[in-house]
Amino acid sequence: MENRRFTVTELSSHFPQISRSLLHEIVTKHLLFKKLCVRWVPKNLTPEQKIQRLGAALTFLQRYHDDGDEFLDRILMGDETWISQESSERILLIAFTHPTVEAKPFCIRKEDTNANVPLSVQ
Image (spheres, rainbow, N blue to C red):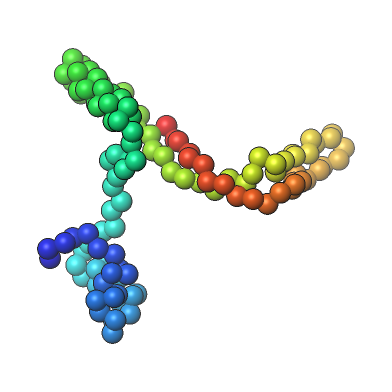
């Protein structure tokens, strides 16, 4: 296969007589392909961000050269994804538990707009 980067949707357009579920089964179970999502560098980096990342990579290489595998054992990986967040106008109030009364949490909504914000997990 020349291009190993494809989607089931693309295959479906080339083979309309075969259902998407059957195409998925053929690709995963018979051809043993796995879905991989790898993005090493975001596409929209500014020149300053590119220089900053290059500097960080060179620093890591130097530290690996100095400390060897011991340096690798101390690395924690981080990742970033987009999450949907309701607007800051939304207020979540958690009721305090009184010794004699069990109150449930409740929520007051002023506005139901959504915004996407980056989430960084490190």
